[in-house]
Image 1 (cartoon, rainbow over the protein chains, first blue to last red):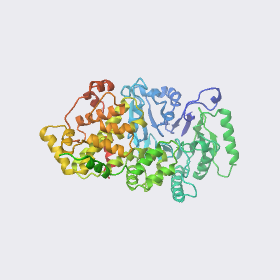
Image 2: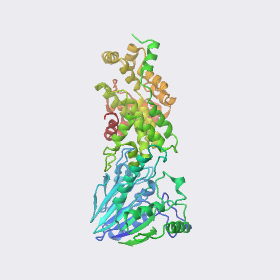
Image 3: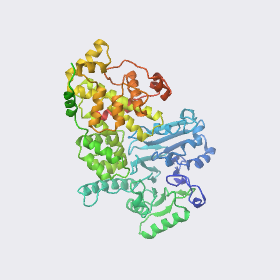
Image 4: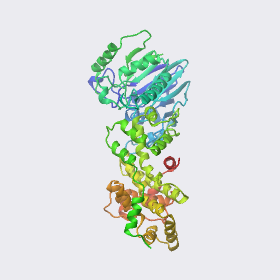
Length: 295
Length: 281
C-alpha cells in the first residue's frame, strides 16, 4: 500500500512564500492498494492537483471517503476532473447529517447548486454513486476494506481505517481530544470521565496496530485553551493516542493555516523534545504535500 | 354563543406554561460561548426533552454503533455542538408534544403544523436565509396553529361544533370559531405567544397567518404562504382546506405562483417522518 499527501493544510488554503515546503492545499490523501485501487480521503483543494495526474489511467474507479463535509474537506470536489469524463466511476462515502436531515448525496449536490458552481450534478458525465455510511459499516474499495468510527468534531465526522493485504492506515478526519465539560468539583465529573474513557478506548482499539496514523494536529498545547471545542487536536494528544494504540508511523496533518513552514517545524520539534523517544515509539513526522509513504 | 373576556383570560391562563427548560435552552444557545455543562444540566432535568434526544441519537439517522443511554454519554459520543443543534430543533416541538395528541384530529393538525414548518423553512432557504435562521422559520410554521390546539383542548366539544358549523355552512373555520367562541384561533395563538414571552415576530406570525398584509416580515410571509401550500399538498389536515391563491405581492416576493412553488418542494416525506419521531415516541 502507498499513501500520498496532496493537501495537508487545515481550514483554508494557504498559498504563499511561507508555505512552499509543506504546501497550502486543504486535506486530500491518496491511498493506493497493492492492486493499484484508488482510495481518496477527503476532497479538499489538494484533490485538484491529484486529479491532474489521473489522466493516463482513465477510465478509472475512485473510492472517495469524506470524513465530514466542512468546506476544507470538500472544496476541491467540483474540480475533480474525472467526474466530467464518461466512463469513470466515483463512489462517494460519508455520514448522514442528522441536524438538517440530509444524506451524503443531498449535502454534496448542494455544493453544485447553480449559484455556487456552473455545472449541475446531472451534467457530470462520470458515474456517481453515493454511500451514506453508518458508524462501523464496512465498505469495500477494490481490494481494500474501509471501516469507520465517529470522531469528535462539531459535525458528524468519521475516522477511516483502510486495510489491505495485512497493511493498514487510519485517518482521523478532524478530531479533538475529548475533554471533560465538568470541573473536578462538579458531581457529574466522574460519570463524564467514565464515558470519555469508554470513547477514548473505543477509538484507541479501533486504531490499534495500524501501520500509518494520519492525525489532525492543528494545535500546540499553547494554542489549545483558546481553541477548545473547535474540534481539533494537539501534538501532545496525538502522541499519547499513537503510543496507546501501538502504531508504527504517525503523520501530523491539518496544519494550522497561520503557521508557516519554519514555525511548523519549530512546534513539531518542541513537541518531540517534550516527549523524548521511548522504546516502541512510532516514527513521527509532519505531513507534507507531495510526500509519498510506502507501507 | 361566545365567551366572555374573563373566560378567555382563564383559557389562556389554563394553558401549559412555555416549558422553562425550552426557554432556558433558547437563551443559553443564543450565546456561542455557552458552557456545555449548563446546557446539559437543563436538558438533563427535563425528562421529556431527554427522552426525545435519546430517541433521536439512537435513531438510524445517527447510525451509531452503540446504544446511548444518557445525555452526558450522548455529548461524549456525538459531540456537544451536534447535541446543541439537535436540541434547538427539538425544543420548540416540545411545545406541541406537551399539548397531548389524544385523537386523530389533533394528529392531523400536528402533521399540518410540521408540514407548514418544513415548507416555511424551504421558502426561507429559497429567499437566501441562512440555515441557522431558517430554523426560526420552521418554529414559526410549527406554532402557527397553536391557537387551534388551545381552543380544542379548552372545549373539545365546542370545537367540534365549530368544525361542523364551518363544514355545514361552508364558512372559513376562523368565522365558525368566532361564532362559537367569540374569538378565533389566530387571536388565541397570539395571546398565548404573548403569555409565553415569545419573540414579537412569532406572535404576529400566529396572529396574521390568515390575514396577510404587505407590511408583514419575510418570516410572516413565509408562514402565510407555507400554510396555503401545505393545504394544497394536503399535508395533514388543518380543518379548513379550501385551496387559496397567494396575494400578487407574495407571488412577486417568491417569484412564482403557488402551484409552481408547490412544485419546487420535492419530496418532503423524509423530513416529515423525521419530525414525526419528535412527537410520537
